[in-house]
Image (tube, rainbow, N blue to C red; front, top):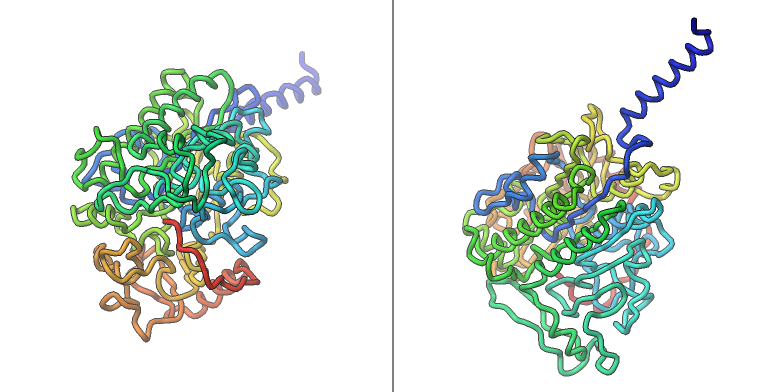
Length: 533
């Protein structure tokens, strides 16, 4: 006969066992691998499972079929560098540079803009003994102060929690057109260093106008390194590197941050993908991207890793209305679906992006979530995933999204979200169904002519088949409200600015936004550099 103490002990053990079974990571389970596929400039409408019909993305769609597709996911900014800053640090881009914020793409001579002492997603995994790698586009700077591009390129990715880095150091549309591995330039020759402003500029491949803009080389020297760089082989090269790295690290937990150059302009798919879509080079580049995703998924299967690997697929911002984007729209493709706006701007098309995740047995297959989430939240999510102390997140803007991934919470996991465009006055705040933008227009590119690379904003709205109550004939109306308020629950396409209809909401949202605004603004340079795009 059991004593009272024995019965109590037995009950306690049963409760502990049940609790462990319900937790995403019980003590007996092996730590999951994580593959984060971070795509460049992929719009909300650029994937089959989000409505694309002029191209096919079977491998990306497979992630949705075997996992969860989010409909209200956002990059923290409509611009590449700020979005990556938020992803890596778990901090809004307005926190960068001592609170002045990072708003535009980084220039080639910029040093590393992330403090090496801060917690990053790389360090989160390193702290649990993971192997970590960043493969692909970096665009967050190297070295302290100005980057002179002399090796070693430190600090850099290796100082932010990554064991290994290989990829494009800036962006595929802007020099230097070389690859970087760890802290050196691939093909580096100390007798022929890479020189910013060096004359003559070193040769690099060029492409016809329909591929969209690739800026001229601003670097001289490093001739061997420049010979190795090949735009049309970059996607294949990065994929081969990823597959190889997965195979070498299959016996221990790993984190792979795979940041593709697809589908940023210039649109330079491998020749075998050209002509395979119904929307030009834009769609062909997405076809190459889908192949890349398929190769990574196959590598996980081949190494017996699929069942214990969380795969996340998302984009750094919305689709851009460059030459490739315009040609795709003319062909009937909607790069950002029915959303208003484009990359760089604060309307939904600039930052509402595809976000898909699969983790067999943990994330419900074929499911959809309408939870408001942001990439800034992945740092806290990865801490929770690996069972780490969340108290160290003090000062971060990151929120644990694990319940939204593995469960179906009835209440919001995130109450509000700060969203940044290219231009600071258009900083915006989202709360529930309300989206408040602190100024008129998109705050993005405002080129006024359809042939301009930087065409965007009010002038491009009609071209994409959108309408907005503040816009008439490609211009902001003179009597338009000074700011914007949208009810996204009723008007996801942002056709009607209801700023004047809800003064009490405007007052609340303005106060909320003001708490995030940078309090000091540095005087703009008279020689402000042309933005990298």
